[in-house]
Image (cartoon, rainbow, N blue to C red; front, side):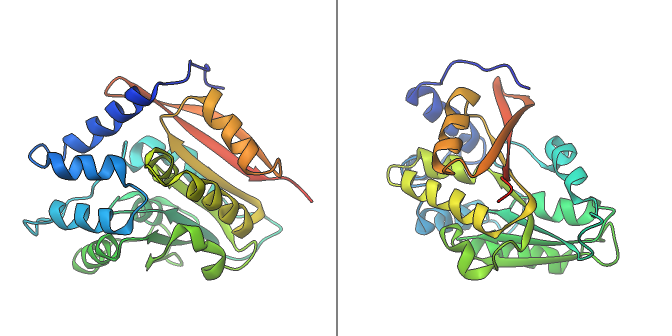
Length: 251
């Protein structure tokens, strides 16, 4: 269990976001400002990925950190369960152009169907084009990798009830919570995730928000129909990150 630290101030939250973004966009202060204020908007992310790819030299953009930092939290959850003979279904929620989803597909020794989903069609197209130009060898020959334009507030319109085994949220909920109009959407996304997760499934939220704030928020927004655990991931650029593990309670 991670050591619980004090809640971070709004100013420090914005400083953290600026630190992540400025590394990629040192010459685009207007874009950085737009992202900080409007990270819940599709148009904002379309602009972000267009400008990030302006030279047509594709490079995965990692919010916080890459697959290697969190694989030990994800891969053990993909082990087949005796009660379920079907392929494990994994959703990379708000994938952007991260290599996280493809990394799961590449490194899982067990068969998985990984869906990389994002509200930005620009991001989805870039990931799809990259996968087409440089095909990834799956860790299991039965595994599948798909890319999908999807509003994370409407998961249940796309996925059936209790149809997903693992949902990975690396910064998506953080983006919603820190935008001016995104907080109600963050709560809706959590409820949508719990609706599509199997009873044996797990939602992993990777965040730099301290446990004293995030755990209370998760318990309140889930309506106490889920269990919440937390582990420390590590420190990057002086900021401590956590993995929040949300699992449905048995009916």
